[in-house]
Amino acid sequence: MSIRDVIEGKKQWRAHVARVKALPSDYRVVYEEIQKYYFKVGPVGMEDGTLLPGLVEFFEQGAADGKSVRELVGEDVAAFADELIADTPTYADRYRESLAGGAGAAEA
Image 1 (cartoon, rainbow, N blue to C red):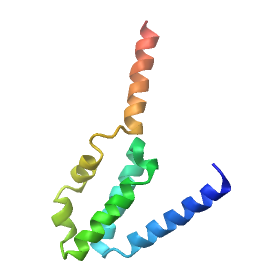
Image 2 (image 1 turned 180 degrees about the horizontal axis):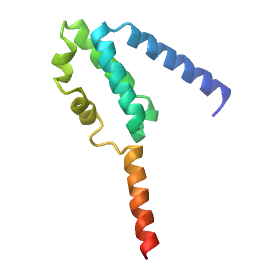
Image 3 (image 1 turned 135 degrees about the horizontal axis):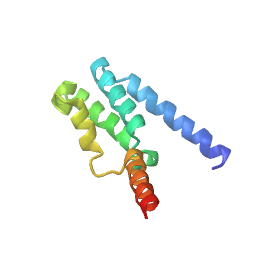
Image 4 (image 1 turned 90 degrees about the vertical axis):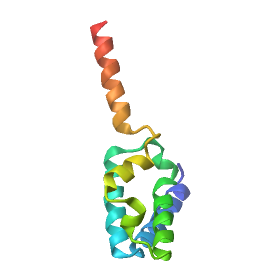
């Protein structure tokens, strides 16, 4: 990764953060909670840069349509966040698999 890649990545992240800050406050709170959750769980594909910007775009459209954030995500924000990454392996999954593989190898 070159210095240009790092600089470009920072520019993109700052632009993303500015979009998040421009969301209505209820949308912003829900987005930030989902983001924290994703940073903990770690969907493996998150580094491709489409998951969080896609979520912001979805929220921007919902706000522009005059919908409440609850109309978009439902009452269970955690279930909504899990559904978005349902078919995506997470780093937690990889860790569990490595433990299961390690236990089997130790028993063999």
